[in-house]
Amino acid sequence: MAKVAVLGAGSWGTALSIVLADNNHDVRLWTHREDQAEEINRTHKNARYLKEATIPSSLTAYSDLEKALDDVTAVVLVVPTKAIREVCQKVKQALTRKVTIIHATKGIDPDSLKRVSEMIQEEMPQEQYEDVVVLSGPSHAEEVGLRQPTTVTVSSHTIAEAEVAQDLFINENFRVYTNPDVVGVELGGALKNIIALGAGISDGLGYGDNAKSALITRGLAEIARLGTSMGANPLTFAGLTGVGDLIVTCTSQHSRNWRAGNMLGKGYALDEVLDHMGMVVEGVRTTNAAYKLSKQQQVEMPITEGIEQLLFHGAHPKDVVDQLMTRGRRHEMEDLADILGNQFSS
Ligand SMILES: NC(=O)C1=CN([C@@H]2O[C@H](COP(=O)(O)OP(=O)(O)OC[C@H]3O[C@@H](n4cnc5c(N)ncnc54)[C@H](OP(=O)(O)O)[C@@H]3O)[C@@H](O)[C@H]2O)C=CC1
Ligand SMILES: O=C(CO)COP(=O)(O)O
Image 1 (spheres, rainbow, N blue to C red):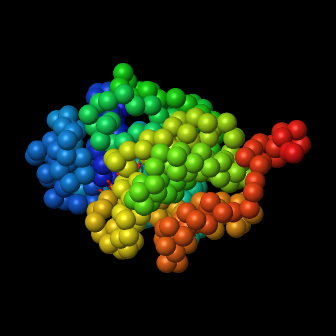
Image 2: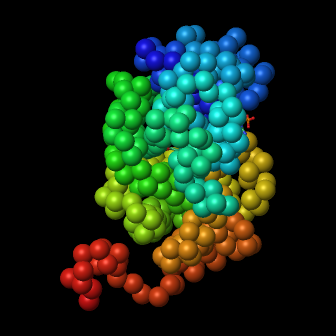
């Protein structure tokens, strides 16, 4: 049994806490809201973020970070990307021993263009942690909270630390693989949110399965293109944190990114959509980050560019689709041709 603090009591932090509590760990779920900690401890429910799930009574919620972190050996960071630096600053002050840091956040910071693990490494002194492990994959909190079969991947530069995370989380409902490709695992999880917004927009416009399938596969092509330019292994994008997470997020009404896209496709303004959601829609800020990265890395990301135009520059959803459909002719496997040499070019 390990002492583990989970920081962030939204839907994903709560669901991951349930997995850890089911594995008989001493789980401390930290929220920055005192009333929420009190509600979770009294009712064993998180009514706002994960209402269907029952939280094991062995789990304790804290609003005092020092108490939550007292003597833990692992810290699981599950706040939205935009809160990562702020929360790391607080953790840095409160930690009393060296820990394994695991993060399950899916985003890229549009200001620094850093991945979440890079931001954690920038904010935390290296002597406070063994390594930063990324946990990612196709995993809606709503299903994990009900203990439905789910698979994820954990990745870190040191395999032993990924295995620490694997040991903490794995059980008969929650299967955990390891993967050494931190860049690919992290980028796959973050970038699929952009494509999920696109899938929602397409559905909101009334387009069908053909359009969504096109978005998923051509989205995968541009994720892999940016990912490999940043050092990822292209094979990672064929796995759980690439294709797997694209499928689950682009085809499910659990997805906040899909739901937000759906409202955009129906004509709602971005502000209205975000007010209505009341939960994080990571794809919005990550679209802007990926758009900037595509320029920096000089890789083509037409879907991301279209969604950037729609979200931040007033483009109409239908015009974005028309633009994507009428781009210059291409070889479908252009990227593969680049990787494998000229045998694919005409
Ligand atoms: N939900 C899911 O199924 C999955 C989510 N993820 C990822 O997990 C991350 C977290 O998402 P999720 O839990 O769903 O988000 P939610 O919107 O459900 O919850 C976010 C939580 O973070 C808290 N929070 C926000 N800012 C801060 C801060 N500065 N300090 C402390 N707490 C803060 C919020 O508190 P408050 O109530 O005060 O706003 C809320 O409790 C995202 O990157 C998401 O992509 C990954 C896989 C699955
Ligand atoms: O990442 C997720 C599932 O793997 C959750 O996606 P949303 O943030 O769109 O709900």
